[in-house]
Length: 171
Image (cartoon, rainbow, N blue to C red; front, side, top):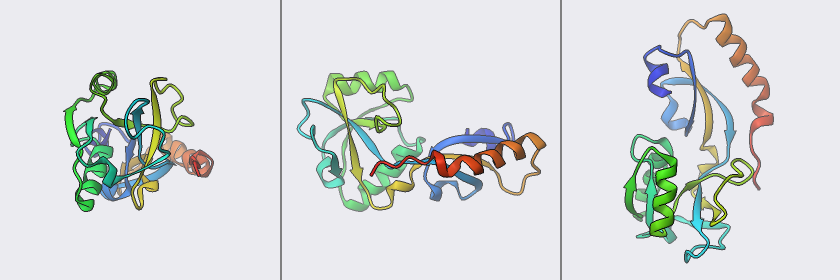
């Protein structure tokens, strides 16, 4: 979606990201919820509502890889904290990641059940405590300074009206 908007193939896109990564676009927060992990119920970190970055040092992890903004944000935060999860594999396929996490008792990114209730029952969801991470979420993006079509203007205006009601409160 980022590339399609950047190249003008699409007027607007909806992406999972962090404001710092969207500075080249006009963007609108649709829903912010932070960073969450799927944790196998028999994993040593199971049962924790909140997990610190320090607890993830050396822990097996599967992820979408460096082009994914959630992966990038998480790995930047880990680097700043001086920790490094053990990345077992990367894939853009969610089913592959969930299967690899299950097989290897690894962690993977997830969503709060309020956002994505279909998390496999063998997993629970835990919040990763990262300062400022509550700004990570879903954003509508469009090219800066680009002439908007009437349709884009209507959609953008509609999203601006809805945005305060779409933001997920998980506290």
